Image 1 (cartoon, rainbow, N blue to C red):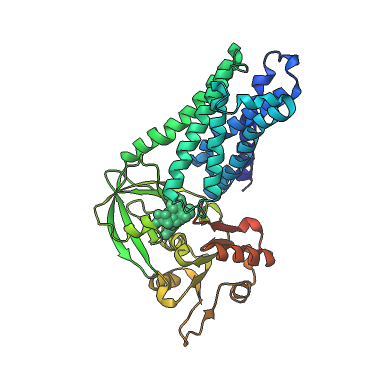
Image 2 (tube, rainbow, N blue to C red):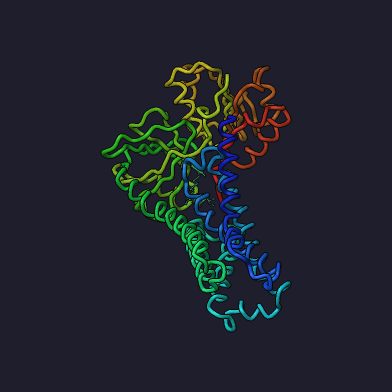
Length: 440
Ligand SMILES: Cc1cc2nc3c(=O)[nH]c(=O)nc-3n(C[C@H](O)[C@H](O)[C@H](O)COP(=O)(O)OP(=O)(O)OC[C@H]3O[C@@H](n4cnc5c(N)ncnc54)[C@H](O)[C@@H]3O)c2cc1C
């Protein structure tokens, strides 16, 4: 745990260092004192903002080494906040120039009066604002995930290229050999990450295809899809991890969908995902034919008992959130693990409880107690009713519940309620792990 915290701090330190790196442009060489503090400060903000924008790509590039200490969802959240912060800095750059340096700067920004340097700068800012508007209000604007993703990628590429051209045309801060050298190193690093993410990695994935072996309809509108590796050994994963799936699409396509693995993580010969039909992509999956080609980028994520060992585990699942939990139960059973496990499974009705027969079997293989909490039960149901609550947990968990590791996966309301309940029960926060099924 301490090693993870140290690695996390090192990565964060590196992030801050790279964000501040452009200030070296100001520090190297003697600045012209007549230009004044505010002009230099405004330029520094623009450079730091640009550097942060460049690193946005790295934060969501699914680089396992970077994601390992934090988890993918935490990195996506960090990416979001750094996007706001970077845009604010880039926006402050012309604003300070106009307000504090010289109001006539406005003419160097408005496209019809500005020189080309100003036009490219304005284009970068417009793209960044467009990204923020479509990201914050995506659902309200009724923009589909795929369209939003395409807008996000194109607008960020245009923003960064336009900003780089803006700096090149102004040429004030990168005119000395040292500064130009630093500038080229930074631009090349960014281009390198782009080529790795969009060209090299998909090309590697293309050489490791998977095929759909079977599609089995489960209860509750869920389908289990089994994938077999084609001419390669497949991979093992820590139970609870997830992969990015492309189906009927090349691995170079812009959009892939994340799904938790539901199978035994130690068995590389077949991967399973349990998928609920929700929107356009997931609805087509229920009817997918065996033999269909698929590409899986994984494993990713830190939501796993393998990463969070303890004397026992409590699993709290709602709906399709049972998928990564099934992987944990199946893997622990296959390993002959005898540590005590407690499963709380929230469902609308017992008829909608996917995997219930298998869970009963697993209960006899593992030291597992299972509690269904049914929102809308049949009149003769004698078990827990309603939603999983603090009271349910207090009633069902053993006295030493604070020593268990907790894994929660389900709808947002369940995750929030459980985080509050476990907090009220004084379970240490580092023993509570959640997987959010919506990054955006
Ligand atoms: C880490 C993780 C694990 C997941 N595991 C499972 C699982 O085991 N089983 C399961 O059924 N679902 C899982 N999901 C959710 C699943 O990824 C979405 O339901 C699915 O991508 C929706 O696609 P759609 O086009 O059918 O639906 P849409 O109606 O287009 O999208 C519904 C919502 O899903 C999200 N989404 C859509 N497309 C993507 C995408 N390409 N990338 C990221 N998010 C997207 C958006 O928030 C969107 O609003 C998981 C999500 C995450 C982040």
